[in-house]
Image (cartoon, rainbow, N blue to C red; front, side):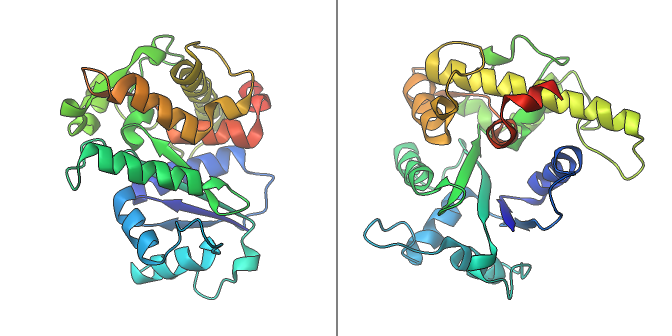
Length: 263
């Protein structure tokens, strides 16, 4: 069974369209759970459970189950850790977070990226920069200028609004399925997700390697490499910015490989 943990309900809504479009042949046994708080709250809870301690191994599935139940989500109640084969977590960079200083928040997030680095072990963490709405910050698909888009920390608190204003698409209908979609509409949305995947994967390679093209080695754009280069190239620049990047397309590319770009 696959466990997907999301920061909020909107993330889970986007994933439902991804599941219906790309996971039809995979048995419908995924657990989709919403944490309903930010990445730094999760860090605090994991530290309280001694999960990030490198000195001993911890089964993360029961810890996540306990944390989710404590937040009112009992979907994993009664599920044994040996039933969960893969764990994926999706959270925002939360650039505008003022709950701690920036360097401290970056340290915490990097610790989590190092720990959650393999979906079949502790789990794998994917991060959107600065947040989920990176999916909307695009011109008409495919957007060949996507690799250039950045957002400063000063403006990141308004990013949801700015992304909606910038987007060529004035709603999320271009990528989100409804219960009444026809197969033709499904194909249009699938094609748009493929465009977004190529754009974000090429941009991740640009962030990490300086080339706006598909990576030669998938590990070149692993989440911790993306994070390190975001910090070195953008966050620590005079502008104090991040390159706008969505986690879902990176996940899709890593899960299915380049073949999905021909769908």
